[in-house]
Image (tube, rainbow over all chains, first blue to last red; front, side):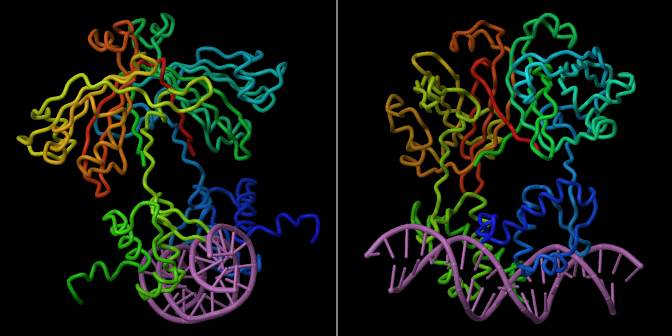
Length: 243
Length: 243
DNA sequence: GAGTGGTCTAGACCACGGT
DNA sequence: CCGTGGTCTAGACCACTCA
């Protein structure tokens, strides 16, 4: 009957689910760390084990937890192998996944253009870090990327030599800036290659290129990175299941 | 101990789920028809109501059933508004969905090329029906489609004047041939427009086009249609959520 | 063998939809 | 009001993992 009357009306499994979700996102248990057993959770939250299971079921469904029979239930760090593998066929002949080499072409601190600062929910005057980057496999250019980061979150990145960034940015974000990418929204389009792009990708000007625009979100759903990647259409393939 | 020892080892909710799935697919209950109540199913299948709920939960998740509290649980016909809307922005200014006009350019009975008969799991000699079709919105060409159907399943289609096909094929398949599309697998690629295609789509030769290759499946998972659709890349936009 | 998640039961009460 | 699905309980037993 208190201030939280609304919460009290929700089903118990629902409240427990949201409570666990918040704890996981808040880093209460580290990745690949087992959470308390179902029996323990049932006791500490004063609900039955069936209710605990229903809450956990939903979080497993969401991809936040992973059950392993006989061992426990674990926090699942989003793989995020880089969604490249969803879209582009970078596999070698044997189908193994190879991480493309990354070459930073440019880095500067400026105000992002309006659509980007809008997507990142930044004020018009807020500074951003702009990266442009070429990704290659076997010295063959595969993608040209333009990346924007909020200056306020990613300041520590400026102390690192871009040549030391490595081939994947997300681990760098996490180590240097404590920024973890939890999910992303991508938009696919296609266009004809501009001359400058064609030169970088070593294709004919006007040849078809795939454009992937991505907004990466933190656990809290805050946008923390905006990027657009362009690659030759002939390297591209994407499959979808429709129901 | 019997012949069905394997089945007997599966969990009850699993067996019940598959039993219900088969009944639904077999048309045991018509679309928008309520299935028996949970209590009834529990009694007839000699399991507890909790087990029935778990089986139904999974089918709801799969999109085969729909629960409506206080009324019952209903068979849900897949909408399949045509996945066009997933990929192409056909909406008018107000964002409403409009079905593009369909113009059949060609219809013939021949043997499909090997990749198509492979995808349709047809023998090399089996006959197919080949359609080619242009789709337009406001008399503006949007997609050129090439469609292959197994002759054996779709014979009745040959008795219909192609001008009477209408703007959507799937309802036609169902009414004339009893073939219901339940799901589909699509592959997206992009390429430069061939001159012939460019002429149909009224774009420049070499302009980027999106290619959507689709295999449509029946409830049983049998492939019943193969099609490839090509449209101007500028009309194309597709969004994905990544976790 | 101890501890974990996985399955299953037989009830109870609640919230909602129609009559 | 009755019948539906929605939530919840307090157990039971099974299957798996690991020491």
